Amino acid sequence: MSESSPSAPVGVILAVDPDRFAEVVEALRRAGLTVTGEQPVLGTLSGTVAEDRIPALEAVDGVDSVDRERSIRLSPPDSPIQ
Image (tube, rainbow, N blue to C red; front, side, top):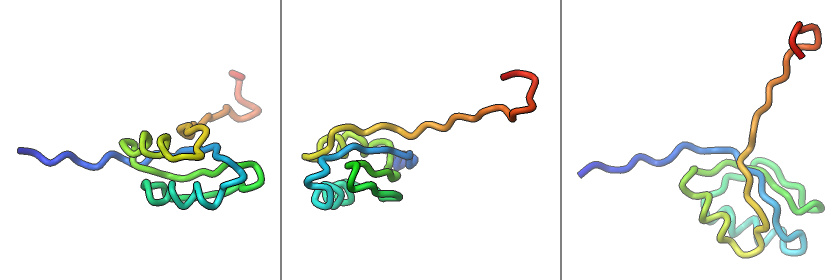
């Protein structure tokens, strides 16, 4: 029998209930989120989590959405293709 390897961490951005921000963030930490940034007034935060733990984050009461971070690379301004 083989052990399954833990899934790689991914960056996520979450929208949560701003009126319960601290409570929801603590529940997200217990669910496996490593918080990297908080914007309590906006009700958003960012962090990293194992890919297979995303459903656990989505299930936390007070979470409105969980989105994976995306990187976009732009060409330099003097590049021939824009």
